[in-house]
Length: 92
Figure (tube, rainbow, N blue to C red):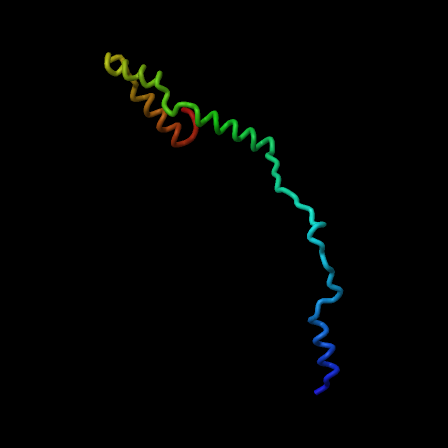
């Protein structure tokens, strides 16, 4: 076994030119973030939708009143047209 070859191999695993870093010279940076304009627009739209009512109370009250008075009439042809147009995704 050659001892000089072993010395060369062991030198490969030693750190070469190790540099000492002063702790006082380290710069401390704070994390920051930037919100894009499209994200701001999305947030405004999302808040507007959240504030809007899910049910249009005026329409519900109007239909309830028409049902109670017996004046709410929908033709079978209108119902069939809506079903077919939604199914085929076009108007008749």
